[in-house]
Image (tube, rainbow, N blue to C red; front, side, top):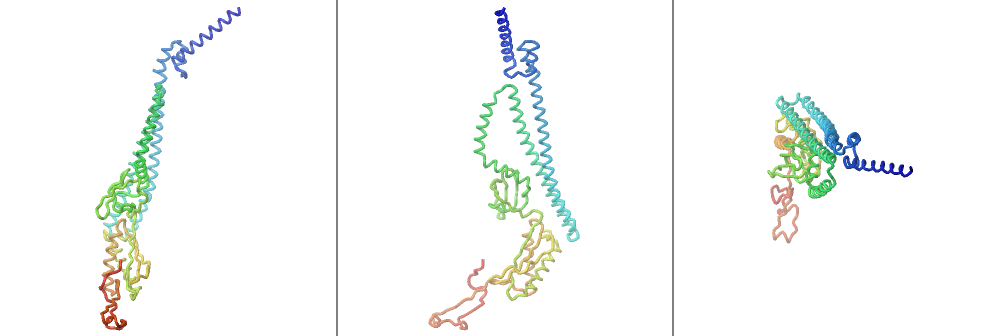
Length: 379
């Protein structure tokens, strides 16, 4: 009896072992619930494997794809929210500028006010288009990353060994990374530059290596044309600091020299009158946006007293405004009899006879205050 019981136990163990081996062959070492159920119901490994391929794996593929679409949509909405916040901040700044322009309607001519508002709206539209471009770029990057992860998960569901693929991709990625560090740096700098709206086409900037007008802005390079007509192509990663002379407003600072014997109050009054007249005229190429300021005596030089004038202008008009002011101030000084000094030199003339007798300051060979003679030592 004992031997019969042992034999039955051995048969049961063999049966379970064969069933486990058959289950592993049909469903793998980690069988899913559907394959296990079908195998238990039918005791057919082929049918269990077919059920897995026709039902279970397509369901998993559909779930992975659905999750990928949901994640992609959530990420895109987050990017849209970020772009909207950036645009709202930029729009508030532009709105304040428009309100300031409308508040100045009493001092601006109608055509100049219209032009100013059009310029501000154009800048706002440019910022909006730039934000949209960034949104499209970020969405494309997010979609690419989500797509790659989804494809790898789907390949794993079909029992494809991803180890060699990931290792190969890692080696290629390291090689590309070492070879394209500068390119990646340029692209990242370009993205942040666009996000922060540091400068745009038409702005006059100082980028360190070059100063001039921006002709194009890309993710990798910025093109700047200087005053001599040279077109500079500067990688964005090499632009360490940017001075923008064309955003919102600019300032022209004039240091005007007058002779030491000049009535300084008269000189400052004359300069202020000329600047106020130009402010009231509101020339198209030299628009002063607020009352000019006489800072006072700026410096005592070797030949002159320096008076400083500061005027706030429209963006990129500080240079033309300064040229107009200098011309008008020179004309006003001529009318008022105010002298703009130039360097003077004392010249000593000696002859052979004079070498025996020291030259006296009141002698015939001494001249002072000679203007226009010799070489000008001024810079």
